[in-house]
Image (cartoon, rainbow, N blue to C red; front, side, top):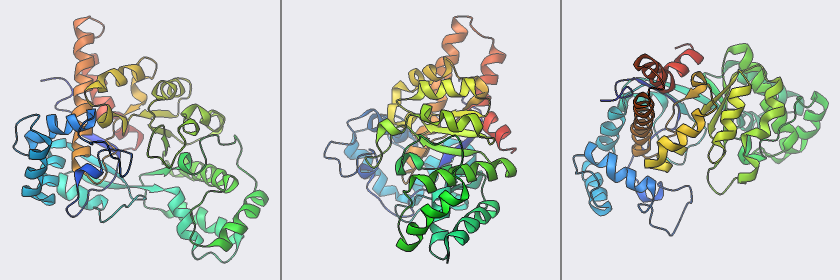
Length: 361
């Protein structure tokens, strides 16, 4: 047993699981409607290797048999087994992405144990306010008020998808924001893509977050085809990070994870969470984590699964993060590069302690 195997996890960024039957093959890729076989990937292999035994099957059972067994057990039993096996104490659930009927933070915790908390997506806050705000002035004021009272353990921004991460160092002034808000308000029921209003919103969330003690999470790096990868490199946030007073969490990061590690090295308020990356890189997870730890302070690295819809993704996040931490600490212990106490402290911090301290749990 490795040092990471008994650490209670804080999954500081994930989503709900489906509350009905879904086809796993549709959720094992960021490419929707992909023609390639989703099990012929490191993620697909990981499902067969680590999830199959939790469902009472041999490791690396054929994909067709895995799918049959999953259907036999049903979504509720599959979710309960996999989420419980993850060993998570706290679930931070981003409720801003709902591709179908999914569990709430409380519902996720009911299935998997622990406690559920809500991560509030700031673009969703603005878009909800837009539906009823009568004037641009009211829109800005209501957004600020909503951020102050949102029942959040953290804020999150998907500005990487809407515009990119090259945010200005200073918040656009109110006059600029009002000019940008007017046409968006007239449009009604449209997503927020205006770069001026997005920059105003992110800066406002950072200001409110600093006042409330809430971190601001950013999607960075790869995702589905809606984003432009070249616009999601976290180093594009450098000007913003120089002035941000809140704690900032860089999510996912791949293939820019070394850039994210650099930012956490030079900015005390920046944290790195490989999230989505780890299940996708599968057996290579230790190598990717090692590249982050080349430069990132150990206290700045956070665990999450970014599990979404499929409980397999929540469980794989836990299993592969534990495996990666064990692989690295075992190799460093063999090289006499750290003590057992150092290894235990590193594992506890990355898998839960750092997030617990950041969020005052």
